[in-house]
Image (cartoon, rainbow over all chains, first blue to last red):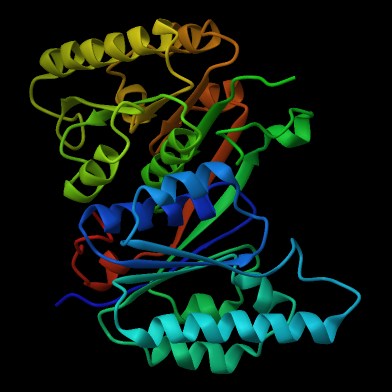
Length: 173
Length: 173
């Protein structure tokens, strides 16, 4: 029996979003529809956006939320944007049209307590049993890991930015 | 200063090839050319292949070598195929036309000693200084890790196939 999987890519290493992007394109390669919700505005750059355009009608990309850390001076405003972004994702999950829904960098909203964990887990648990959900981001809460079917921790063994090499087009973004 | 990176995705978790695929598509999204050399025949399926077709002229995919483990009864034949595949990859690296060369599942050839490590490392070290090389696969040898600029270890925290769920179209392949 097939079963919709809850997949988590977490850890401090590179490749979490990139693996989710690869999964989205693989599903689209099968002609299956994917909703890719980007919870951190500005995290995606030209390369990803142009790549996704080649899968028009199959991968729907939505950039939600705000800047890099979700740590700002205005916590109420952050929480409001986080709720809006999550509600959008909930609608995508409930719509029934997507083989896979990717919640990219979603863990940060949980980590910074912009959202309550319990209701989020309930939405994931109550989704259509055939639907796959992929969640990326550091600091995946233990309860999310417990709820997931497949969890990979990307561990940074070496990172060039620590060695003073600048981020590069086509590699880092 | 930009610098061609040697990037390794290793470890026993999911997402190594998928992250390399995402990187290839991101580079192609920038209009940059990628050579993706698949060292394990049969590792790729319909979804990846169809996805890559959308980047025709930008991503060149080459399936080399033989089946899943490179462990067979005919070690000499394996070694010959491994050398052929590696020589093909060397030519792609030397051609100067690729922004990025992906050596997918290449580590197994080193792990099973189908190739000598030292000459391989020399080819990687002597490549054009702007060229990026991405190597995936379990059991990356320590010397390869030492030579790399960016290393991520994908660690399996949970894997559904251990729980009896079958591999599924659009997710596992």
